[in-house]
Length: 362
Ligand SMILES: Nc1nc2c(ncn2[C@@H]2O[C@H](COP(=O)(O)OP(=O)(O)O)[C@@H](O)[C@H]2O)c(=O)[nH]1
Ligand SMILES: [Mg+2]
Image (tube, rainbow, N blue to C red; front, side):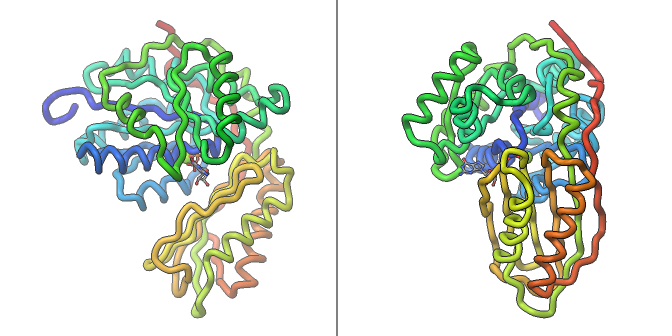
């Protein structure tokens, strides 16, 4: 419970891998702090054991907790425990929770249990689902070949946030909106972009309002998505890195990401994310399908001394192949730049079906 005994406002930002959830969470948190003096904490979530998104949110200066090794919904007690520890640590006005990009049935297994079991502690905003405009457009142009997981996620939305609106033209955005209005007529649609932050104030207005999540869960058991989930290879690793010479971090991570892109059909790449950091500098880059983007370089573009490299890749690939591709691209790029690598941790697997701790229909 927060200091004055009121429930902590809770925003769940769902959506597929690479949709733009973490970027939006950080932008919302910054804007709520700057324009409204609100403090925001973030909960990240992943199947794996190290998460680039967590590094990024921490780096942005927010209190962060993570739930690793599986969805919030299957680790509900840990999820609530982490939310409570954020409340006791920093008394945030708002907690933003980002479920794994392949999470399904968030209404029945996260929203409903929070509302039913902890009504005094958490005040849950309408479920927001982030949808990548580029992906939505591609889906329309191909006549609806979107996977079952992203379409189910969208059907759960009370607010669909169309991200990366800067990547499509105005007429394309209108087409996407028309299509979404057909698919989820009850949802509110808001387009946004991390470049121009359009419509962020109206999103914040919703987050800081008293509107609550009211949508009834869509009953589509998780087993229905197991096959699609299991097609993904889920790779995470961390390396200790060092160099006496100056290393161009931008060149190194660009080459690494390009090398992954060259190995796979762009459609099979849900995302590849990479952060290289030292005491003085950090660089982050992502690849979503065929779209590569530098998400930030701070400090210098150059690296010297000791640091850390964190890699996440979620790709439709047998895990054995993904692991060998990732090892190869990293060691080749490091070799070219005289960066010494020492692997600290590595895992690669296909996600298994998960059983939610709670599955509630009101
Ligand atoms: N052009 C553009 N890129 C974006 C936008 N939002 C996110 N991205 C990029 O999309 C990639 C994936 O974003 P991220 O927030 O990590 O997605 P998540 O996997 O859903 O958490 C990163 O390279 C982001 O910089 C946006 O509004 N416009
Ligand atoms: Mg994320």
